[in-house]
Length: 330
Image (cartoon, rainbow, N blue to C red; front, side):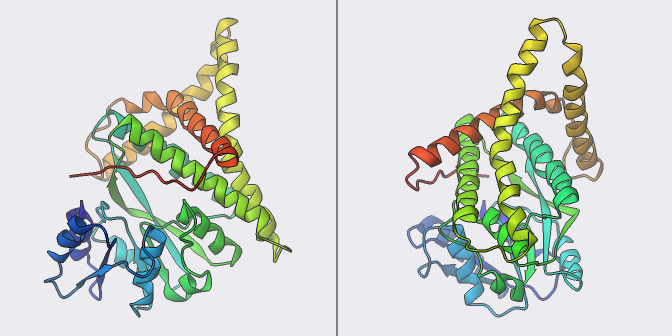
């Protein structure tokens, strides 16, 4: 998938651009593929011998060996809009970090589930969370930031399973100004199989539990109100899955007792929200067509919740640091 990542950067409208591809030392195919782009003077290939084994380490390595004022981080399979970097960099005149939007391509059944899950649990819920708490997600892809901001929080933590979620709370507690830029969204590949979809979600939720553990145990005294609210926000992400899954039994009771009308409104609201995002993306040419995948949302959320609950229980009882890698190819 590297042609998606590197190719879309090289057609960026941002002129003063250096693309750094970081590969793991034991991944010869990726190293060979990356070196095919090294003939372009704007592309540099790094083999991550300094902090091998994680995306966080790879990003930190690239940051250490470059000296640009701004840093941007993307995934290898991410097709970036040519206008994104210019627009995001312009915003950095008034903020520290700019977070863009990423869209899983809904080109199959599992991929469509990933898209709508991202639209509702990612995009819409994050907007609501920001409005209520002033916490804005700063992830590890589709993100542009000042080097000073990156260094202030110490970069990404390679010990964290979800380094982006940990990084977001580090930025939040450091009072960095994080803003969102949704005008020029990136597209990525979604999980292509049920096994990968489940494994990826379980990894994310295990990482959320790990971040919550860190937020609760690694502090001696709150520095500011954000130090107090951070564990509460994170706990909401972790334990909210229990609430969502509990709604299934309540809905079943209503159906059994002939009160189906009580679940029509919330289900319709969920479906309408997913449909609105899909229409928006189709209107701006990010996706082709609309389809009927939005009808699956009432089923998708309980499945996501189940993965989250299983991940949390296993983190507490049996997790030994294992990772789950999702296969992607194009």
